[in-house]
Length: 454
Image (cartoon, rainbow, N blue to C red; front, side, top):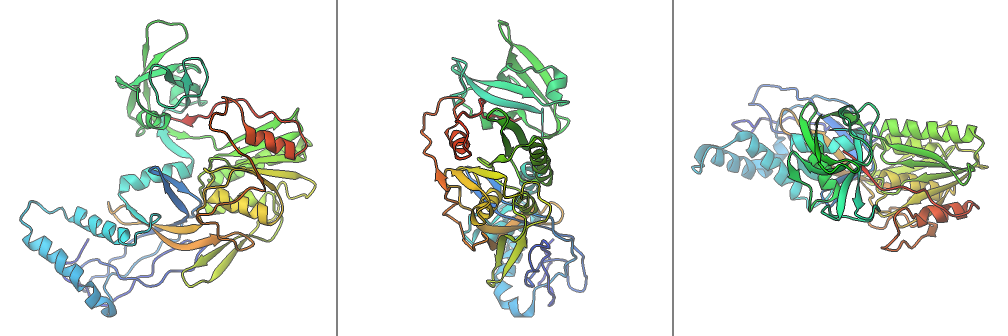
């Protein structure tokens, strides 16, 4: 809440994650003079990329909680005078309608952040902040089903939904509302709540199907050879999405582990999958980070540490140019040099994926195969504001590989680059085929479709 007058001199130490040093004192606006108001903040350190309206994370960690002391320092009083003059003039004299003080405050915060002209620093409302955290946590609210597109000829090579491109249920997740409601693999979704999906992408259709826990969505589906569509009502719930896919390739000689996000749970599942492959006698491992937008910094460290026994995983460089190393955690599952490792990346591999790929490349622990990665090398801090104030993220550092390379706007260039044509047949995977060749195995990727969780 803004005060009626500028408060007396005080200071604020911004709480930050333990992986970064505390930030400098900054001015704050709070209650009227003479009243000390403890305000609780949660800071989250991350690397974020905005692309196509979607938020991609390279890593974050929850910061410590701290009380703040409100006020505008004397040294900043003159600089802030135009702000207070504007605020009081609007509050006292604006005649264009009712002034919503909360919206005014949020607008001021948004304006400060936007004035930086930094695409990775931004303000979010409470709802936007909550939605952005869903993907990082590995949880979302929806029905719990893997969905994909299916062309009229039965292939998955289609984009925009319509008469020749349908949305298909790949599989309901075990124990999910979708499974309990009776959805089956192969069901075609024609509409949601009576509205056709024609003209939507699979991601836009997913957003229609997802929704708050406890709410109901009605899917109109076509099943098998049935001529009459049926309607299925499903009550949404909190869904824990699959982050790790593990399987054996090349007649059981290669362990394949795909990581879709960097939550703590995902890092634990990578370790478990690697140990299972090694216990089965496999000494060739493929780590697939393609399309992985990132997640927790600690998870990136833990995943890289499964392959790197010791030394620096990455550096963080703050605004003063000070560099802080993050070292490998001992006891990784696949640190034995006798285990051959190939890491797959593409243009959708961002942030935490690049931290891992960069560490594996600089240390010589893995051969990087695929397409040059996204190229995100700055670190943001998210700070949750009190009440309905939402949150903001601010660029506060950059990260570097063990060789102190800054890959921002450059990306990780693979050791073995693979040219992927635009018209790859459904089920074909030239990058995976090339990875198998690097490991001395015959080519032949997994057969399957790209799908998302709804």
